[in-house]
Length: 329
Image 1 (tube, rainbow, N blue to C red):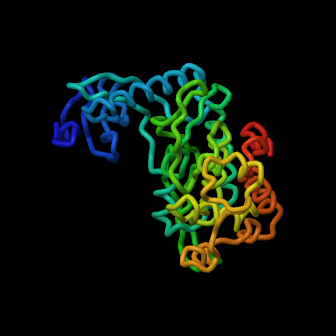
Image 2 (cartoon, rainbow, N blue to C red):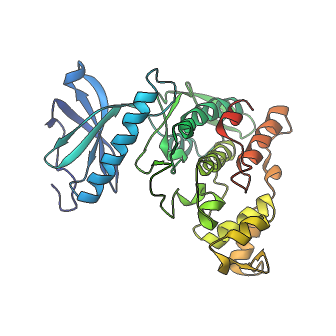
Image 3 (cartoon, rainbow, N blue to C red):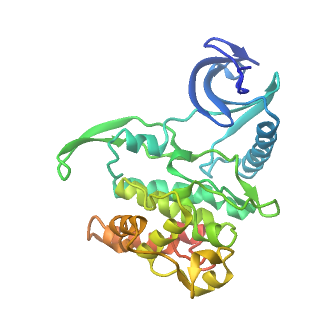
């Protein structure tokens, strides 16, 4: 092992009949490598190699449990969740093998100078993400949905000229995606961590109250906005600033949520205690505007898309659109 717990390896090394070809990525949990699986007729797979550290091993066992349940429920592979092939232990490292996917929707957009995805691409990706999110039917919440955790199956693209932007742009040929990273997924009856989700995709109830399935719907709304605009809706790293941005975009936080909030220090007389004239206040005012003002076209499907976004970005979790209703929107 390396000093921080990663497995030390080189190209050509073989782990239980999986021959390492390349490193695909690295995280706090360990590394993901591309392999030839000689047990599967030389099929190329992705292998997640967990650090040889107890807390990461325990987290990996929880993820395997989630992935096995998804696999059992989704035998026809209709959920658009990544498919776990198998797992094994190698000198203290838990190794999980997956179907090999391509780049994330974030990395593709980044490589395209953050140009928006076409609306018909967003529609197809939204359908698939909502189907994957319907894990709620299995009493499971993903809790970390973001563009980095949505991967294209194949990211081959064509280059076309964008007359509006006066530049060439990449258009992915096939918008089939998979949702990945179930390391933080939580079943209804399990302990619910206080803080979940990457900041920009974190629902208001996570900050104020406590959370359940609807927090995934909020995250999906933020993701779809980012696909449409090419930038994040909430570009912040601070709770109170995040809430101030929400108020600029969606209006005042409902009094019921304020009264029940565990963050009473953020409020004064039922209103967010926020100084519009501070440096942070000026930043929020410059950065945020009412949601409908972000429309890029007055076309019918653009208005329909924003109607869906407004329902997904509803403050009250109990009033937020469900994913099954979103699918029929």
